[in-house]
Image (cartoon, rainbow, N blue to C red; front, side, top):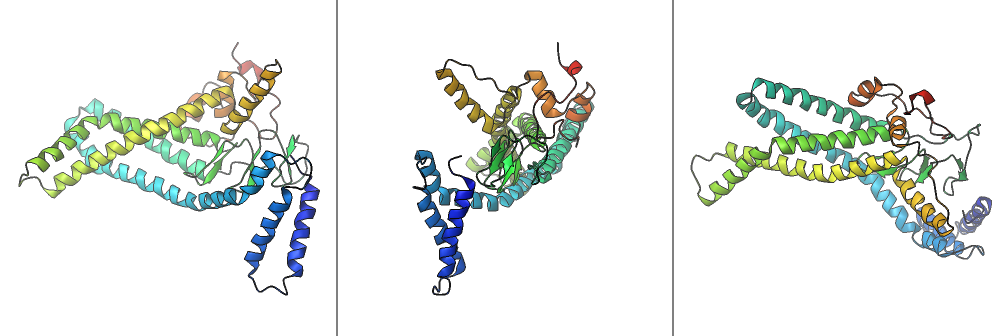
Length: 354
């Protein structure tokens, strides 16, 4: 932190007071005067004290750009959520109206039972985890002073924050164990919804892989049928057949693309979880590792409890039955930690592997 919070607030009051004294003489709208006062504050902050460096100058100059990006992302979050719902609903409509009748007519009873059981389990998991990750608050530090330890002061909120807490410019608040702001959820991914987010990514990727593999032959048949009919038009190639073939192609292309992209993202988050770190902490820990390596020292992540224990903490697994009730089935249980303290393992030591 480069500036003293009280000094910055004093400077902002001075700029606003000078703007207010001219309010009676100026005919400009209030929002223009506020923007102008903010720009003056940014310019004055460039030479505010002797501790100014390139990072401070960069943050000050590009602050309007950051604000614009945050505002646009905040507004487009609702559009992205609607897009997820529309695309997922379109795939479900194709599966139920086109693919399911084909499966019932052509597959054996055992295969039909497998597709019905797995497909509906996958669907329930997708809907549950997406809803929970979108509506569950990620968690914020308390606004009143308590006994929780704080490690820093947020330069945006001017409030103390505990370990693993970072400020989200889009949500305009500090988030406990913040991973990132996800526009597809229109929500931050933090301490209380991180598990929902990862589970949604995992089951959605699994569902897309399932649709891609199950429909690969239908896709080839539909593609070849369209190509053949375009080259040699036939009077019996009805609009319904053409529509069905295009729907199958659309489903296969969309699910295959999402499977690759979302599968890579899910794998990356799985690696981070195994290391006991978030996306933000990945960059912080990398910098600390390089900084200490120059001094001949080794950096150790204080929140890494071991690969298996990291997954237990993340998934909220306290006993063996929880792998079924809390992982393989929809579960709304809270994390084992409160997100404020991370001093020790949040479960009994006898549950740790020998």
